[in-house]
Image 1 (cartoon, rainbow, N blue to C red):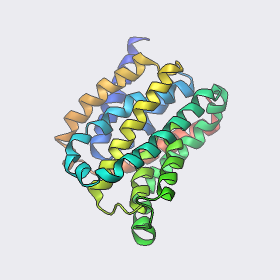
Image 2: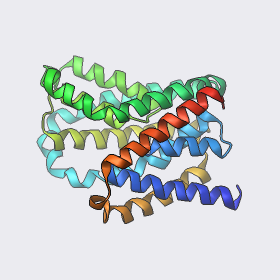
Image 3: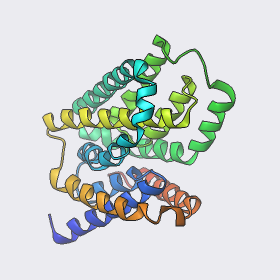
Length: 253
């Protein structure tokens, strides 16, 4: 790895940490940058799981009260999510690099659209589907499992998917849904990373440099997060995601 590449990854990490501190969506930046360093798309994707995991994990200690309130239902939801993540990660493991390359622009575009319309999704959920009899039922667990397959395979946009799904299942309290989402995605990422390590898909130097930058960027930006326009940052991330998606459609990796 050249010094220039290491610097690019570190700056990307700083930006990702700052983005996550304000609005989330950093995978739409980190994943294409990892590809730009010359990593195969499937290795860049697997490494991105490791690079972005700390952002979700850092929020978990702040939700101790919420976890106590929902502890009776937590195990079954987490189990369904972990099984889905294992399925998705194993699918990535057995997929050829060429197959994942062909999927890359579609995955990036889907993650960008999820990010762009996340608020609309939440509004639709609250208006039409919130509180369906899914919270403790097998139907809800199956939905968590099914959507977690995507989370284990690609992951970008999974926070929006899981948060909306939990609201559909009847977790009307924002903080409870957010607590489950953060814990689930952290555990899903841990198990996915373990599978990817076993499969030799993690590019350690690249992932660790982004992790370091992300930790510093997130810590520094938390102090200024309330001063930054979330609207303009969201527009920037959406344009970034659309731009990378279009680029990979027109110029395959």
